[in-house]
Image (cartoon, rainbow, N blue to C red; front, top):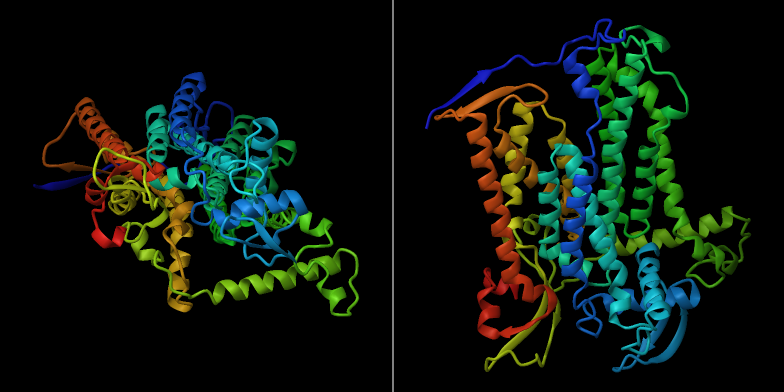
Length: 560
């Protein structure tokens, strides 16, 4: 098949050249600066349907199994300890889960916010729904300790839906992104289990959504100023928007808060802070280049370095806020470390030094974590589904109509979707370059920040890692798939930002391209839905014939 490339003139001028006078802003520049519309009530109604589907999948039978599964033995109990003591507490348990010894404050290796969120679900379920305890050490049933993970899982899907709608200017593509997230087994299982990683996923995509809104806000501000007479080619302050209440990048600051709260769940979110800060700077420099500023990179640095620093400061402050109960207590691990060592403990400074000592212990633990585990995996295996994690296995499964039954909950992404991520990323890079589009870079760095740092720890520390460490990258991987589906519908021709048109042998009309692209996209979503339905019993622990369970183990013992 012959491939020909036709070059089209890019619609980006070098300079705006007096575009600041009312009515004289070039159409190409105006199109680049106009905010991406939210879609109105129709888009929100579609998002509501996606949320309804996701909620039904996540809340139905949420309390099964009624026992603790996988790391719920830590986090569900620690949530209850937060309610009882304000900090994690060290108990010893017998085989029935009864407390046999009280050893005081516990040393734990993850910050407290995720456990406080789980504690909120326990309290709501206990006080509002009178959910009866099923284990002695948690004051609600299993629905209670899984309530907030399910809520945050659904909220993550809503944010993905709305962010995709804004980025791609398509309600259909926004709904597609939300549905793919709703029909993914990894997000499903994490949403139905009281461990920390669904909260990490939530805060990563929430911070990104805030930055997308910030990008729109900043561009709309420049457009308003240019309509009011601003000439961006003028030197110095005359070529920049005026400072005022509208100049404050509220959404960017909100992103800093989201990143800090994410670090308050797990430290792995820290990688997103420099990546997103660099992304903001790149967007701001390109914005000034679009409007014709003489020194876009320098001006962006001068104008935005303070706000980017504020993002980092808010992230740090938000992280410290997640330790508020530890600061307020006298019982937390190393809360009075200096005093216990016979050293002076000044107000505030002493508490911060004590926390620093605690964090140093945590860092040493993580860098030395190399104990083998049967479900550990390496980062290069994650997108290939090389080693899923068994969360639950029933030793005596309920009857299933066969002589031998199996009941398992396994953390496994929907295979059709996850095996599409690598080709989607490669295709996204190609489309992004050919279209001169900002979206592939934004999506790509979000996915990279969630996965690539772990390659370093694999090489440097040989650290024990698990598949669910990829959770914060998943929304970005889904956005990559949806971006490529959108390109199949619109074709790889001249995009919003100019570029080349690629014709693959047979030229298609716009209507034909949209028809065939829509059919291909719908077929892919249908395949994901069918695959999810096939694996659904393994996501909720349904009892099925053992032979049927084994047929789902496509990679044999790697999935067992």
